[in-house]
Length: 187
Image (cartoon, rainbow, N blue to C red; front, side, top):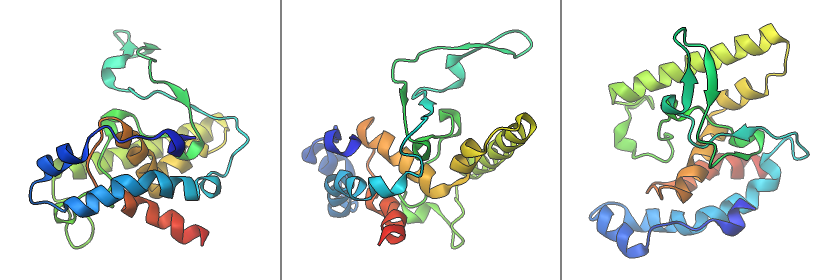
């Protein structure tokens, strides 16, 4: 359903103007083809087509989590963009967001694929710790490991991020690079 209704919010002129001397043609091609590629692999990506599906809070930031003086969670606000999604599209909370390596510019990473930016390296460490904590919680509560497995799957995380930022805010990037692992797995 997403692919049938996905519309990139920026015009070709806006993209060309903002990218100036960048890889405009590659990005424009990716923007046009991304929904088509998602549609082509969608029915083979999800392992749980029949549900139940998790609720995704599209604005899950610190500022939307109400806590008491002991940091106990009292509630979560701003549910405007909330929706159910396939497990494969569950993302980290936005305060742990990073641009996926395949979508980003290669010059932002070293020869081992590690980010050059210290803040991004720190975010990667925090994401790893978050997955470990979720896995410990799942084990302690004797529940399935769908959440930790999804968060730990880099291909799913890359896809979830790109599908979200494609629509809002219309982030420029190499969308087709994110789809490649799914195309390889289904051919």
